[in-house]
Amino acid sequence: MAWRCRRALFMGRFQPFHLGHYNALKWIVERESEVVLAIGSAQYSHSLRNPFTVGERLEMVYAVLREEGLLDRVLVTVVPDTDGQHSLWVKLVVSFSPCFDVVYTNDPLSRMLFEEEGFKVESIPFYEREKYEGTRIRRLMAEGGDWAQYVPPAVAEVIRRIHGEQRVRSLFYLEAGGKN
Image (cartoon, rainbow, N blue to C red; front, side, top):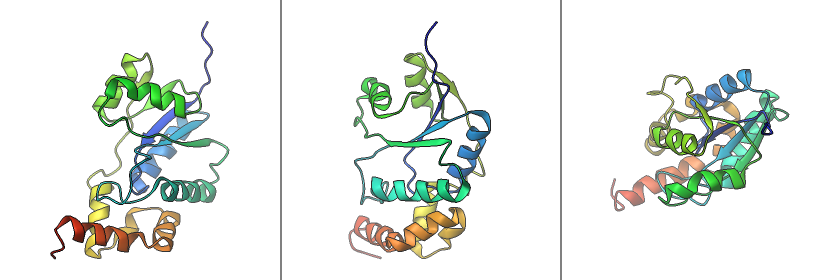
């Protein structure tokens, strides 16, 4: 019989780690003894899609885990992208992560890739997806809206400390060609 490590994988870019991610993680932790939270696209930052560095995202996640008393149940790792070389991606995730047996994702491509490699894949309930969506939250940051209500308070604190709102605003300005 094959060895099982009885651990789940929850992967995302977490740009930023918002309340939808937090609720999904809580839901997974209720079902699994341990969770590997993998921060994807680790090599990317300072773009509209990925404004925060992997170190900043680690700080966001750890702040929430510490505040919620989950440090003993959630292991955090970072995983770079394979830039479209999908057949290599699962092997990269496995090599950058503590062992896991089941993957929680709603992304159809991730589901297919992990299932092709023999992993059990489970879906996660969406938590008000239209509200808790990274692109929307980053847009609120850029436009000076009330983005902080959509992230855990500990994440808002990290974003303020690193001047993340100003960075996102600058990135939107640069993307528009320097025009408002």
